[in-house]
Amino acid sequence: MSDKKIKIAVVLPAYNAELTLKRTVADIPKELVGDIILVDDFSKDSTVELAHDLGLIVKKHDKNKGYGANQKTCYDFALERGADIIIMIHPDYQYDPKLIKYFVGLMSDGYFDVMLGSRIRSRRESLAGGMPAYKYFSNRFLTFIQNLVSGQNLSEWHTGMRAYKKEVLKAIDYHKNSDDFVFDTQMLFKIIAKNFKVGEIPVPVRYFPEASSINFIRSAKYGLLTLKESFLYLIRNI
Image 1 (tube, rainbow, N blue to C red):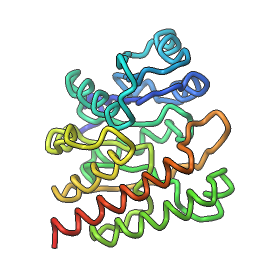
Image 2 (image 1 turned 45 degrees about the vertical axis):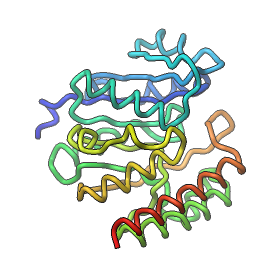
Image 3 (image 1 turned 180 degrees about the vertical axis):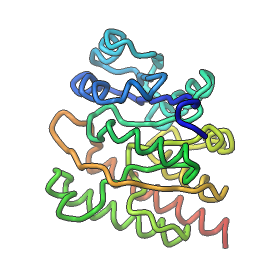
């Protein structure tokens, strides 16, 4: 698969991303990407208006449906528009869109079906980049459990920068996934169960006040749901 012949789409699942959207879009390699699609989950700020000003393809939910539901709309629309590789990146500028070309290269050359951008290369780098200590240690713990039950050796399961070949999305019934944050965990377990090849590359850690982040209570709920999904995967694959 040559990257000169394939269609690349970037999807941005957005909620109140007005303060960071412009910087995120500016760093997307336009010479490589065909569609830049923003799905707005009923933001309370001017995310939609700014997305239109930036020339993005915009879809808007008529109510707040959740992070997972947002991704479902993202992938449905990208596939409808004929994308061969779909790259999901949070529009909060925590992740570096300039790395998209490396994701695409490894996938178009046939090495991987799915690519993850890992923020966990070392504890020092993660904490120096502003990741709260409780998030770092919970991320490491949950990733260890998920690797243990799935037989993988990924450095991070919880990244907001992911790329999928269209064949992966068509083979995974992602519409049955949660509409909340545990959607990403369910995706990876389904992908691994289908024996798709998952790769990862390190991405810089960027936490700052304008970037989105779930609070401690929601993080705790997410952690418990992740452990539940890990247990269910283990039971299904014993």
